[in-house]
Length: 407
Image 1 (cartoon, rainbow, N blue to C red):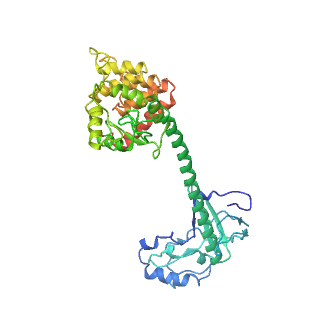
Image 2 (cartoon, rainbow, N blue to C red):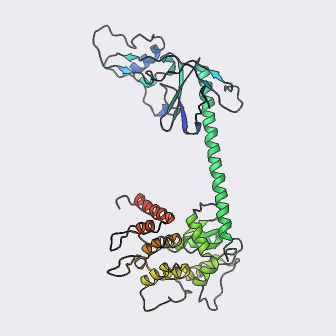
Image 3 (tube, rainbow, N blue to C red):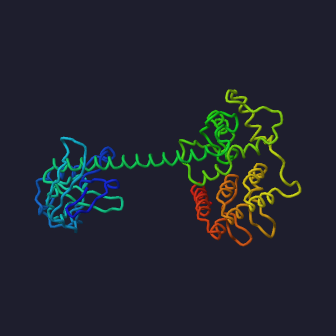
């Protein structure tokens, strides 16, 4: 939509209002008008601009009521509108120029009874006005030559607003679809991801984020039953894939994950794509819940949390996954020592490794935890000039605050 001066109004973030009329659909929520309001509605159109809406022979003066939008400061001599709308006999599609009449203040003197000014329509103000209002409260005032013409313009603008919104949502969906397809394609190219990590079914289209695996829909249902502390499930095709999640998935993959989680299966047979749900569930619970096939920790005489910090400092993703599999939440957030109270998350942020930061958060790391110098992980991410780590840590903090406001 353009005006006579060549300025454009972006209708996607606007709405149309008729001064004095309630928005559509609000009538049912309003109270029945009082007797005074009904009298006013019946007489308003017959009163001139200089007449009082309610005559009063007494000389008493009461507080005046100003009719909304009657005292507009901005005056426009002429204006033309043009908009593209679907073919419709009831809509105006040509350019129309309508002069804007000067607006005057109209004050109402009445008795102490309240007057429902909202019941007045635009016609009682001396013109057939409508207003386009943006989200940031910018207003464009127009006036038609008749009520029918105004109705046609309002319908045309509302239709164009709807079309703009639909087009915008379609564009968003298409963009998201392209991004998801690209992410899914990237994840599928990782070694071993052409088959389900648990049963070997071809072309799996679900993922376990914290495990870094791709699984089929049948095994996905069992993973959901394990709980998010063991497996966080997401669809490759239906869900959004931020870059930090894609990075974790491509850093692990089914081959690396199974080298850890199925290291000691011995003579046991994995389920096949034709296996029953009971067989799949037994295997999956042994694998992830009971951790029956994990290899031993690298060091028996070193505390787990210190081994975790060492693996993170070396940026060894596979070793980090193995140690996290053995770690409890308390061990994930444990300080290195009584004098050096940095945690594994502090170290991951200091080296600017978003994959390790994300993994540690999924396994219970506390983004607000501070070290002996009073610094949290975000401080070290900023020192490392890792914007991705800072953004990830801030996002986690915001999610905690929104979930637990008092925290």
